[in-house]
Picture 1 (cartoon, rainbow, N blue to C red):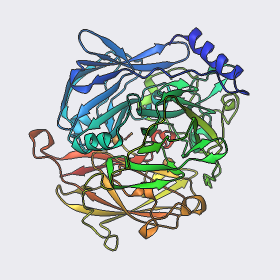
Picture 2 (picture 1 turned 135 degrees about the horizontal axis):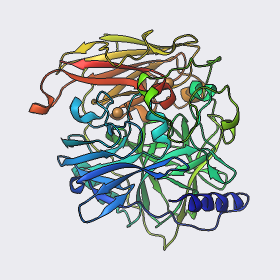
Picture 3 (picture 1 turned 180 degrees about the vertical axis):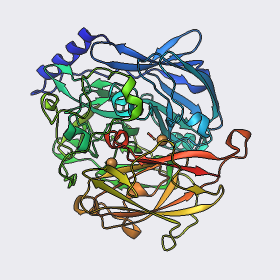
Picture 4 (picture 1 turned 60 degrees about the vertical axis):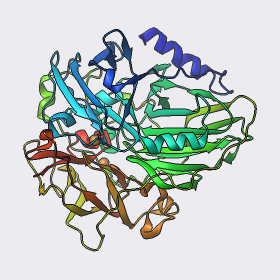
Length: 516
Ligand code: C2O
Ligand code: CU
Ligand code: CU
């Protein structure tokens, strides 16, 4: 989108803010088979506002910002081309990939360079995603628009769609981000020191890159796969018709379907996390998806120390003048506090009502955790220090350091503790899905949603790759470090464990580990 059209879109929606916006159906992003992509180009969409985009080159066609589709077992074999003025990588968040293909930032693609990437999708059906991961530039590039969705399907997924008897258009994959909109325009990334402490927060939701999105759906079931693609904002997702909260059914989490659906009225969705849900639209006319107000527990005060990743020194920011330097100043326009209510998107139900089939009681067979919280293999602690910044085990990130090694094929229990004077940290593990075994010390708003054994929330029940820890909380995770037998996975493989608040990530809240 060029700058003029972007401005126009912003103004039109601001002008309509007090009344119901005119019915406008968001264009569905183009869907492309992962296996057909020959080249994935990472480029600037608009040099002025610093917007960027992915373009999938299919040989005969170029498709900007596609949703990629893959069947479990299908492969990608293509070239990633970096047309940005900064180094980048493409990290496939949630997939089990060897170090060389994971795009974790050990080996960034320099401006103007390309890299051949080949892998097979081994994961269960679910919503996965891809985004830049070059150390020190991740937050800026993701905010600039570099977020892509990858929908993986398999037989469980087919069976579910068939059971729901989904009408065409009633299955959507949505990347929900927040953007700063001020003066009718999207503000470029220019975080102050305070933004680098709490994270860069916007005041308007962007869904698949668009403001004020609304979809027309048919009566019956609607299935939504939702990613929190915000840099830092936690979402407490709910659906409203008028003043009433409309119940929905949780079907799956980051790494695919649950064993059985759960009926909910609200759920936390932190950055990097995904959910798969179904809503019964019988008797409904219009639904508004919102993030409800909650206490986000940002207990940390002070300022984050300035972290200039050494890699940044040679490159200018995409749009902003400075990153993490000004005290708070100019860029604060358009900052809405974390935990404030935020409208996300709308669904409008059109068509003749029909019967909704009942939900299947079994959705999938979940991999067993195979480990107990009583016997943690490792303990980790999350801290903040005014001098040293965000820390995992008292250590800021060092690209050349391997924090620990894990033997392949073993099952470990990780006990992770967030300090009391802290903030929520959505912690992400590369390469391996895990199961949440237990939570302890969970705070008010989240504690009320802890309906499951061992203090867990319904959203903890599936396979996860990202899990939020509120201040003072301890979680126990079971991770199965089995890697595929193929040649690509031979030898020591490095992976990362890090906070997915992207300002914390760029602020060095990461560790490398190795599977040997
Ligand atoms: Cu979604 Cu290491 O990232
Ligand atoms: Cu990842
Ligand atoms: Cu964090």
